[in-house]
Length: 272
View 1 (tube, rainbow, N blue to C red):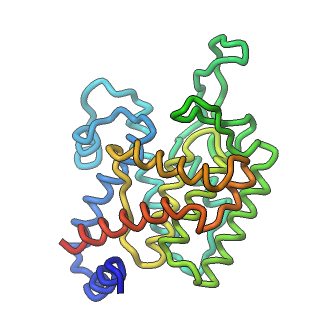
View 2 (cartoon, helix red, strand yellow; view 1 turned 60 degrees about the vertical axis):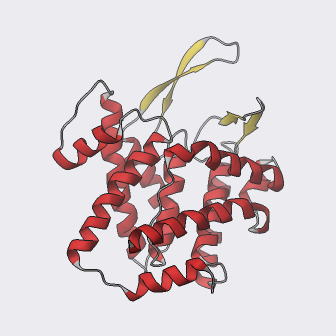
């Protein structure tokens, strides 16, 4: 029996927790997850400001109203995710994922960018709607890395949800393997104009909670390592979007190992 299995069995033996212990764990997780998942994406609220917001509903400092709104909305998204995960009769759906994106981004907004000729311009981010323009990222080596095209995205997302629900029903993959592979395939599609990383991490926790594991927090201080491991998997999987959308567990082994470490840490913290 490996370490995670031992910790998991110990965790299960303590269920249900005393209400006061459950509330303490839930409060700590709410603070840690909302802060870190948003901070990974550039939200400027400090941990202290986040704590002040959630504990007292107060704001301080010079952070933008949008950062405060998105922090609060992200917590609504977390509560939606928990509720959906605990409804074992309801399969995962594209409608829920679109609603989650709409919730955490609050409302349509304009984003600054550059035109193909290099001139400053803006485009509108429409919440809860699959992307209508290509999205990509510049890698650490300066190369352009493309996600799925707008034309490919609807079919890829339908396939992803169908695959997930079938794999969950079969039960051949462990919840951690299922969460890691779902996160990876989803990120390679990058279906929305914005919010994709936050949605990926919410859905990882949807899968873990659904299978009675404690939810995890990827620390913003570990961002470089998190992205490096994902990029390492990109090279093994292949760089075309269809490669990413159909990645196998064997191809993303470094990311699965990373996720196992996160779950191990979450179990240790929950048991302490």
